Picture 1 (cartoon, helix red, strand yellow):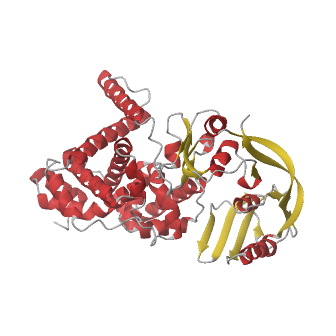
Picture 2 (picture 1 turned 90 degrees about the vertical axis):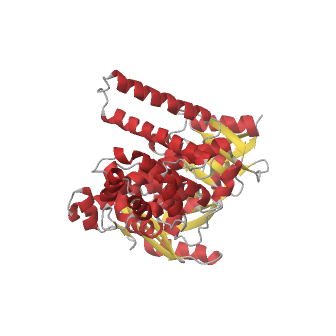
Picture 3 (picture 1 turned 60 degrees about the vertical axis):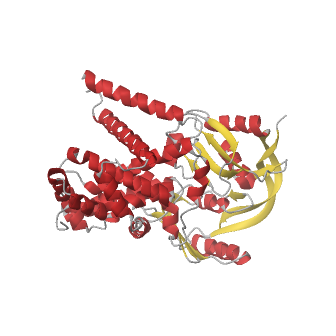
Length: 497
């Protein structure tokens, strides 16, 4: 039985009702399905239920799957959609469980790169085309060679290499837009090493038994999850059909089906309207799809923290979970914390907040700050201690002509920190420095011209770390931070009149 490929095993099950063939499929793919569910929910018990549901769905849909289906990719997508359904159900049923599931999985063994990309990975993969998603799953989740990837996709080894390379670059750009700057090599290595977690030893047997019974022995919650996942899968398929066939929806029956799915989706969104945004692992891709809403509420997740921002035209949209007041101020006023002054005591409380209006999202959040917390901001010029970023050596060894090879990353390896930017203005260093400085940093480089920037230094404790970075800035980039006192425009947060 093991010599058969996925399609062979699937045909054995469909045509001969072979339980052994189905059990072999479960054993082959259970770790992948379980890993997707665990990454989404961070709750091992919930991940086990999702895994069972996915294989029940496979058993129900086996006869409908094409002989050309790439089962790894189909199972990945089904696991992701079932996880989304489960999270929605959890939101509606028991909000108190959200904090618990975020604390059930230890991250101690994860690499730094994996820790950064894990919360974003499935959202990034879901943005890919079907072929690209299949390439990622085959290469990094199934661990297949490039030759094997090419064979499954119906291309040669060289074409597979090119596709995988392009896909990893797409993932890198996705992560970079969300503040995670890593090289393609670091991303590929992190996914290969960490994306698949071993499922509990007993789960394969349990999932096989439940699936072969077509869910008849499943718990009520698992049956509810299956029903919801099938509805979401149908809706997702309908949306793809709409995109692929705009202007071709002529058949009344097809139109009826699409309208029914649209109605179902509206009902789901209406049911989740008040709480769907309040879960700790919400990602940027979800932020831009949420209905328009503006709220600030005391957090339900004091031990969690997540701040997600939309990209491109949706960059004013935010969802923050377990966030301090300073981050809400930043989202509302688009003003760096180092240039913000609290004229009233800054609250130590944490909040969950959302602002997702299509227009004026930041302005609406400012109004909510005023209405709910009685705080407003105004600009005022004050004499402040600041650091001036100046160019001392325009021919520094860490500056090169810009390139378009696409590599850009910030990487930490032990105490070593390394920045490589392929095509950026020198002033971008100011933004990086400001993000970690308690003092305002004023950019006086006057360097709008783009360049390739290489910077590397060793982190140490206390003042030595500051000195090491300043020395690296001077030696490698010819930049100097000069302390001074000068008038600076500040944002003053005070009580509303």
